[in-house]
Length: 229
View 1 (cartoon, rainbow, N blue to C red):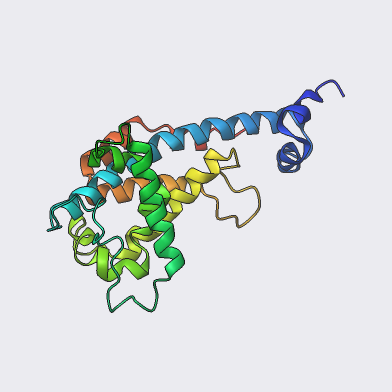
View 2: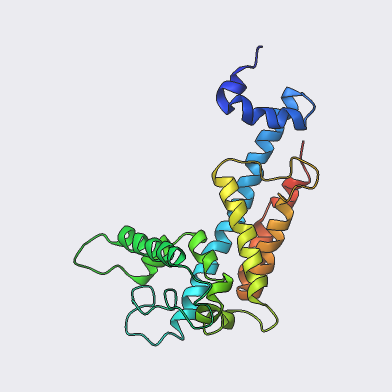
């Protein structure tokens, strides 16, 4: 086979997905793979803009209402860790530990000098989208959403609205990072790059409308979707 280098490069199982999609047409399968990469890069541009806006918005929303002496990420009494009577039965020790570990790890990565506490900005930048996505879990409704985060959104926007979009965006971000297909390869697939693009734009429209317009103006996602091989 003159182009067996493709299987050696991508791995036979990965390329087989594209071959099946393209009825065995190897050139079209390769073109579709390349298109998927370009689409992933375009989506990642929009997602990156969303992620930075989200984390800074959440930080401001909590900081403006947090009455602790330390930054909320550096306090043992942080609302991120506090159990309320409303969610005590829902929050598990494992979930608490996972969040604490993620924040402790972010603090460690942000620390360049053991004698100096890192700035809150550095810690915020070290937290992943996966960590921020936990802030709108149902179990955080009474310790994070109601007292802090809801003020960053219009009144009609619910925690479920925000969480649904963030989880959809986070899922796509992970697929791109792991070089997986970002489009539905089978009928009825939930992998829909256009729905993720809409989730990014809609979410930004809620808490950073100027950023939403900037994303729309520079995005190539819709154009690439329309140019699928």
